[in-house]
Image 1 (cartoon, rainbow, N blue to C red):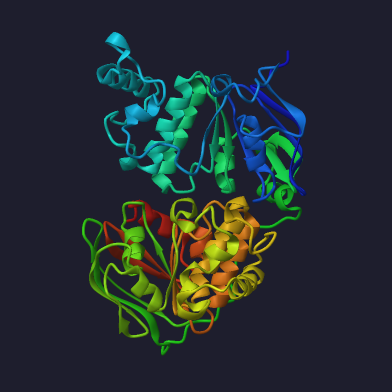
Image 2: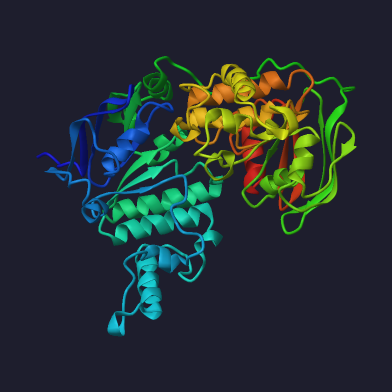
Length: 499
């Protein structure tokens, strides 16, 4: 007895001009499974998702739902009844309530055809309760956590009739406990007949939550197999063409001399409501990591250092005091910043690679504050070469790049001003193994001489290259570990279960 797949993609091909985005896309997802879709940035995952959700018309091949041909591209209601996708980038409208987002463009009506707020709230509350999503329907969507937003989007998709949901890097911005809660919800939803495609660069998650995996490489289908029949090395080899283990960039970093001068000094830095007073020093040639839960205050500390949040206390770069809440002063003072979410505040999608990479030095690219395109493009080409950004050239819109390459452009912007210290928040979030290695390699090489780095991350691979790692909890530093820290001890402190 054969089981008809929930969805099948057969021989999908798609070109964008001369670029082959997908040459042989294959996917078959069985009812009630969580099916991993993995591959390096640029392997064709996003293109395949676009075809599966009716956003892109394939040049060749076909998509079938429950054995039947996919609906015409213009029939949005039919597509939404079959498939939904929860993206890394929020698709909710922040100024609307949860209830308004759930029933956007299909609000219930009362007498005389007028919109009924009471019916809207009641239906939203019933929907959230039916799928066990613990969110108040009256809360503005902008106040949701990433975890809550994802569950609301899943509930909204299920209310349209879809029982097949694509999750695009759902854990990229979540802390460990939130990931565990999300996985529990996915298991519950599977038990209720919901099928998932799970896209992630975090391979341990594939083994934890998925039953089968499909690998794309170089725009082609490589394999589909049960997860429990593939070792970690076999999966990585399928993704990148050769066996590779955990990224270990910086394993040969020399010890930072005890007499090395500080490049970044924090004295009693506090952020109201988030950080209760932190003293911290980064020396020249040193990478200092900061770990902690989402509620630890680590990200707010980084944002205060670069002037994005109001703070008290002192921040000094090369001995010079920086004013609070002043981003231009922080940049002029010698800070290079890589934010934690490239989709929200990492780059401007409509601008080119060159414009994004040189944004922080626009005043240096021509006389009297003007920008000379030739000078801008020359600087961008050097950054592109230094960071191995795969792009058609400096004029290509950054929105057209893969996740790993767009993150490299954000790193290029942080380095463009020749900073004394780098402040990096989740520098490898949502990128593939090779891009992780390239980004961390850049941090390693840039900090071996006259720069330092403050690196905030949830990724143990990121933290493993640090010379020291500080652990924050409830807005304070509770522990410090030299290189060679014990993984179990560090995770226990982050999760608040040490001792």
